[in-house]
Length: 335
Ligand SMILES: [Ca+2]
Ligand SMILES: [Ca+2]
Image (cartoon, rainbow, N blue to C red):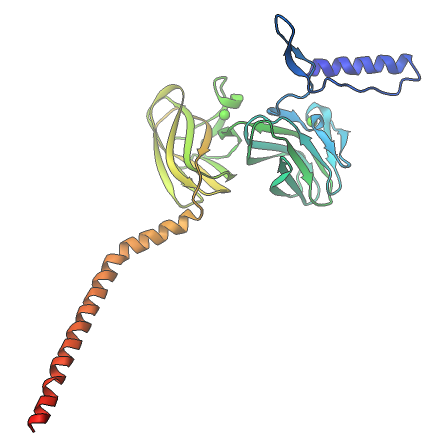
């Protein structure tokens, strides 16, 4: 793609400098990628490749009044400025994604809508930043969809790049204690989190998509135990068997939509966590469900016994009253 863009720019420059009547051109091959001929060969004229990994904002399609600007602090020296409501960026042909990074800066409070196939999926309320910052969000994008970032309010915002990840990468989470990011060619996105061995070492992911099962991709020098906590409530311990190469381990754990998932160490050494996967459909309001279940389950036998005793006493009382009342009329008759 870079080579094609370079060639097109050079061609454009050539015609502009030699022919004064030359006004511009159209490129028709922008999405042309197919097999042709005999023997078949791939004809690749495309400028549209799957949105995956690091993608410069300036490579997206600009919507409304979005403008490309030069900025030495931005990656590739260029970023896109959004000023008014409706200004935005479109990224076509997304790969199958679960996490998005937006690298941006703003000097005012702005709200940014994130759309997938023209449906608003999330609205990010962004606060003024000190230079460029990265915002990560958990977002499920089906392969082939298009994604849009659109300003929902007035206010200047500059988008430098986006990151499009297939998984919820552990390295993109907030880390605490001894948890740190390290490079590993074998890992997804080339990075992993290590140093998760005690209670202080934590990986925290906010606003993640829901699911009924949590999967961890990891490798470990020894058997390790980690604790998963959902929204500070429901927890599950997971034993990760020693494995020299990356493998998956999953556990049944209800994670409602937009939860905070925390992973902390309990025991073991040399653990490397690559990414987190979620599958299945989450049950909503799991926390309150469980509390009610526990209360109901713990108290109901006692309640039943009390009710039975009360009912028994009531019956005894009624029978006694009836027995006491019956002879009375007879006594009166006798009188
Ligand atoms: Ca850029
Ligand atoms: Ca990773």
